[in-house]
Amino acid sequence: EPMLRLDGVEKGYNRGRVGEILVLRGVNLQVHPGEMVALVAPSGAGKSTLLHIAGLLDTADVGTVGIGGEAATGLGDRRRTALRRRAIGFVYQFHHLLPEFSALENVVLPQRANGVPRREAGTRALELLGEVGIADRADHRPAAMSGGEQQRVAFCRALANRPGLLLADEPTGNLDPGTSDQVFAALERLVRGEGLAALIATHNLDLAARMDRVVRLDKGRVVTP
Ligand code: ADP
Ligand code: ADP
Image (cartoon, rainbow, N blue to C red; front, side, top):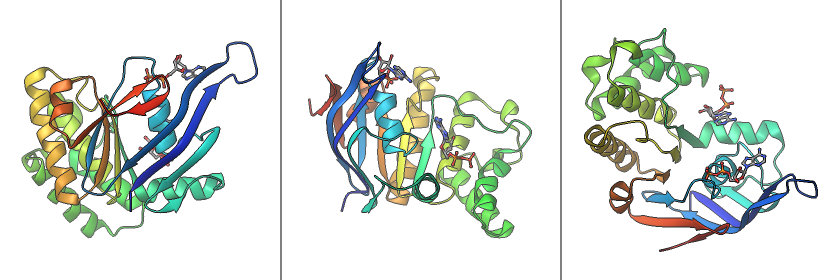
């Protein structure tokens, strides 16, 4: 069973009005547990639109979205938000860590918000930071860490509540090439270790080639190159 499943997804903006644009024209895509899929697309092709729909942050005009075998299409806002929080981790180009909190606290807080006891949340956070090689930075605030370290904390935070699906939008886009390789290796380690399904948008074709599968967005459809 796929962790993420998009069937016949269409999405446009300003439909039936001036400035109408049809961005997704029938997207079919499945990502299975344990699979890392690279999403490559030229700027403006609809990559963010697709990730927002897959992440239940926006809804398709036509077609269906399934997360872990559960139909997300047609859910009300509250249930859709609950499913998103339970099942999906997000990583962006910029880390959006909370500046006044330590690396550890940044990974603990989403677990606390989810009702995980403090001790257990701390253990989980340290375990994740250890996986990506920065357990010794646990007490540092983001400003005292390098860009690559900050991004690794963001990965740990995204996975803190054990989602089944990871969605990433240019997770190494803000880093120099050497750092980018290291940080990607950390992400790969986490995704493999946790058995996640991962859909990772990237412009970096070297990184894309290291994933299990590459898909391209072309004229509003997902194609395999
Ligand atoms: P990408 O992430 O691949 O650069 P996007 O999904 O952000 O592409 O955008 C795809 C197309 O949809 C672009 O032409 C963009 O200008 C347009 N678009 C995105 N969001 C909106 C919006 N809220 N209203 C109108 N047009 C939009
Ligand atoms: P919160 O607990 O802050 O209310 P949400 O449930 O709104 O979080 O969001 C869950 C995840 O989705 C978070 O990682 C958040 O950063 C991301 N997110 C929420 N809204 C947007 C948005 N409009 N665009 C991109 N990411 C978003």
